[in-house]
Amino acid sequence: MSNQDEKIQIFKPYLLGNAGYKGGKTLGEIKSKSKKIYKLSSNENLLGTSPKAKKALRQSIEDLNHYPDRTTIRLQESLAKYYENQLTVEHFIAANSGSEVIEHIIRGFLGEGLECIVSNPCFMPYIMFSEWQGAKIIDVPLKPETYQLNVKEILKAITPNTRLIFITSPNNPTGTYLPKKDIDELVDNMPEHVVLVMDEVYFHFADADNFTTALPYVKSGKKVIAVNSFSKTYGMAALRIGYGYSTPEIAGYIRRLSKPFILNKLTLNAAIAALKDKKFVEKTVNHIHKERAWLYSKLDKLGVKYWKSQANFIMVKPDIDEFEFEQKMLMQGVMVRPVGSFGAPGCVRVTIGSREANKAYVKALKKICKN
Ligand SMILES: *Cc1c(COP(=O)(O)O)cnc(C)c1O
Image (cartoon, rainbow, N blue to C red):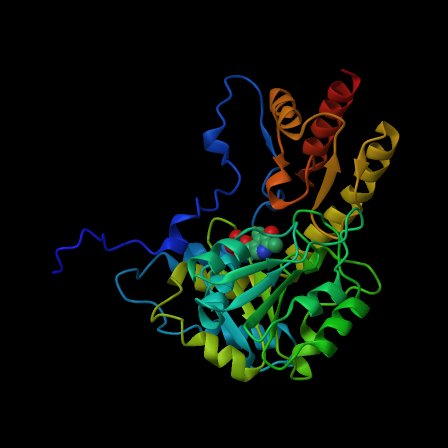
């Protein structure tokens, strides 16, 4: 040892800056003595969980002493079927949640000295997990007010060290989507050393004509990775399972980060069953479309500013401070999510719930707006 007093830093400096992603409060954290609480703060499926998934869970509870499948191949096979064989098993990746899929992608492509591009307001884990890898994060914000992608500025921000670009459509927290022509422009002009990550976890709820998923790009061999989750549409947030798809080369590379026995047996079987539950997805999507239109009409009437949504939530901008709004809503029994920290200052994201929950939200809005 040298006698110099120089301290050796044992902590990675890029891990110290990050306080961690907190996520929305759970129902258990909100105590209420009397009132019913409507949780409209985490974009969950408020119709419940896919019945087919629940049945698979019940059946899988026996035989827990043995290890589950060593790989995710059974889910990959089910996914290839779900995508009507437009993709093969080789195209798919899976992990314990959409967030973990994102983490694997980031671990695969980012590290110290490398860069990614995000467009705020966006899903925070892109930034957090990139920080974990010591990567540099370049923010090219969505255009103000419209929350559309600034393709020209993104292309300008690419350097030889850029590896990933994150886009989200429909986007969380804004609910807005990216028209196909913008994504085309980005994909057509990205250099060879850049991979586009398309987070499409809300795709079931999109109905705009010029909406697109990553499927056409992946099918034509572009360097694009789709991220999907069973948390939202399938109502399986508590189980933690997600998947993605990309070219066989990229997907195979990411699968190297898949540890043995990565998916537990219950979750794996539930996900496979959920993919067959067309009825539940249809019921969920129809419900969201109907309630979205109903909520628009109420918000219009009340003169509350909001953004048209392609997802299962609507972002609003109340006249009062976002945290004051959150508190006042909670006093009326409605949990909502301020999203200033996501990069939408003064805005609040409200999940589309059951009609009963949505009515409670509108009733609370009326009270709060009047004051
Ligand atoms: C909810 C969400 C995910 C994934 O959620 P998991 O529960 O981790 O599967 C990914 N991206 C966005 C934009 C989301 O809103």
